[in-house]
Image (cartoon, rainbow, N blue to C red; front, side, top):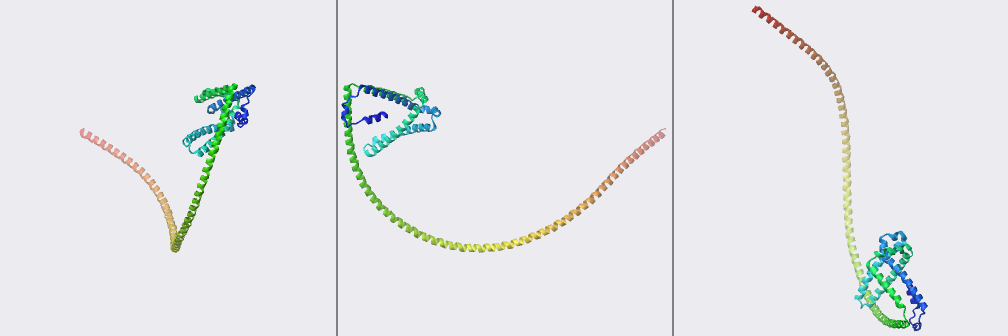
Length: 363
């Protein structure tokens, strides 16, 4: 870019005297050395461009750059890919529609603006990356990991720049031929400017025709607007008429609703009175039921107390009878034992008497 600015500053195409002067040999060598230096620095930065995606993937830049610089690098990579895709699409469209000169010219101007913005951003990114020695050292180690297309493109750029430097070391005859070539280029540029002026005049004529067409279109638009306003007024009147009819209908419905509401209020008051009467009767019935319940509970309590007393007496009587039963049972057992003893004694007596009788009759 600096060389381009230097060339534009020194470029005076209207002055033909520059083609007669030959540069000094020392000046030519200094220019060549400057070009070589710029070329080597440019190629170093181009190597950085090739390996920026690899550095981002391996998280090397995150540990070196600041957050703002890292954000700039990421935005540049994303924006460059998107702009490259859009430019390819726009270029193909411009080739198809070559007859529309005005639209294609605007598209090319927009593309040029985007490319200038992209170049400025890329140069800023390269300046940041080139300012870190550790990143320049990393470029050499990651160079072989770059894509084959990038390496091939770098090789062609090297060859192209070396070729440019070699052809700049020309003889006076070749320098004169070169100057003549520049003259031809200048004349062609002059003719191109004249052609551009003619095309500009043609475009101005087309613009005036478009303005006239626009005026007729605006006149038609105003006429259509008046018609639409009239239609809007008619629609508003119809809406007001419909609204009035609807309001009358709603008012009659509202009156009928008020009458029904009053009737319902009267019925509700009657129901409230009946409900109060039923509630009073229920309260009286509940009071009577509570009184009867209290009376019944008192009677039940007295019966329970009397029952408890009778139960206690019966329990004592039962215990006494149990004691009598036990004593009678013991006496019964004693009597049974005495009777059994008497029976045994009687049986023994009978046996002895029977034995004596047998002995008597036997003897």
